[in-house]
Amino acid sequence: MIYDQNTVRALYKKLLAFYPRGFREQLSESMEQTFNDLCSEWKQKPDQSYFSFVLWMFIETAIGIIQERILLIKEMNPMKNILTNLRSPAIISFILVVPFMILELINRRNFYEGFPIPLFGFMWLLPILFIITMMPIVRNIRAGNSVLANPIILLLRVVFLAFIAWMWVGILIDQMPCFLGVPNCD
Amino acid sequence: MITSTPPLTPAVFHILLALSSGERHGYGIMKQVETDSQGKVTMGAGTLYGSLKRMLDAGLVEESDKRVDPEMDDERRIYYQITGVGAKALAAELERYKSIVRLAQERKLYPKIFAYDL
Image 1: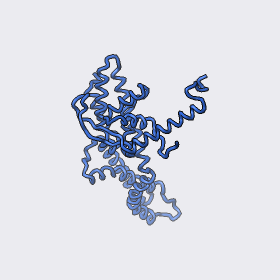
Image 2: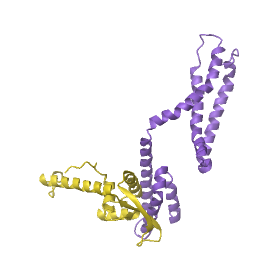
Image 3: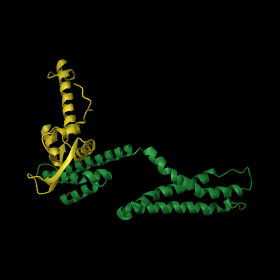
Image 4: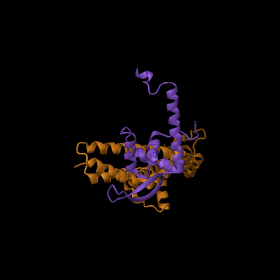
């Protein structure tokens, strides 16, 4: 049966994992107990729909999780954090692109030829994305946490990182002749 | 009397009211809120614990200990109790309600029927 009590309790425990860490550490044990108490109470009410109760509890708790997440974001001052977090990747990425910009400037066939700003902009953005995607993995390793704690998210990150790296290297290989001033390159 | 304590949200008010008569665990608070409101207020776990978190942070309530509820099974439960700050906030809120009821009586709105009910 889909709403077997043990399954429902296990699912609720999984749902509680979505609360912010501080909240979870302080209150999830208590929440789980309360949920178990409510389940036991509802099991004793043969005339009431256990499924409706479970659905209501899951929805109500999910709303609570969203509220807590929003509160956490508000407390963290997201704009300041975004700017602080973006500064280093932007600088690193710029340092990575600068040699190719210099090559392009030196090897231009014509001084009046347009400088490929969109190309370098894109080449600059890709490493930023790469670093931002990689940051949580590095943070976890530094904090001594297991990177395999959330294997699906890790896998998605690795796939995305590989995709960004492939795109960046692809552009570089494609444009290298132009950077080196090879005639008739495009 | 106007107090300097900010008004409480309905959830916080009901939780403080439930804890004013003694320590309770989460399920106990829910049941007490239901009893106090004659079944009109039903609090889910998300609302209860979201409010409890903010109340713990504000020092309105505190965790007392972990023990077995003699009326339930043998599982140890975390109990919550009202603090001095919480008791003051509850008293201030009740005072606020009292002054509102007094104002309503002065304006002859209570216990008569409200104009919009006519």
